[in-house]
Image (cartoon, rainbow, N blue to C red; front, side):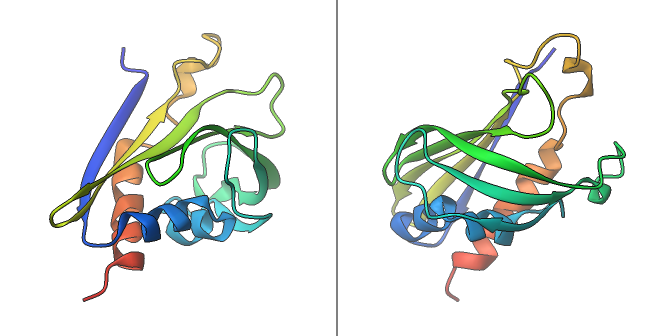
Amino acid sequence: MTEQFEVTRLIEADRAEIFSLLCSPAGHVAIDSSGMLQSADGEPVRAVGDEFVVHMDRESLNDLPMGKYDVRVIITGFDDGRWIEWTIAGTVRPPLDHRYGYRLETVDEGTRVTSYYDWSRVHEKIRGRFPIIPEAGIRATLGILARTVERR
């Protein structure tokens, strides 16, 4: 059974501009396609271990009766301008340890952006609930990212 997926899209924008948005708490909210991310507090991230808070609304998915809650986004991978990865710590104990990330590569036409979602570290007792965000949701987020940074 697949425990991760990734989606790639060419975005006609500078890699540094895209990466800056991905390091910004507000940027995560701006490009979210799920509707769960409502707002965020914190400074832009710059290294593994950096964190920010996201105010969530699970009613957007209508899958669990969690309502509104907060999570901490914790950076688990970082290569400035090229790669950012994070996990989420929230109300579930122990933390789920599912990972989201982006890899960016400069190409002639702009930036090749790969977004991935990996739930392979989630405890097997609850792994059947995953993925929380479907592949189409990750693809839609890349579309919103493109719309946000591309200059036409």
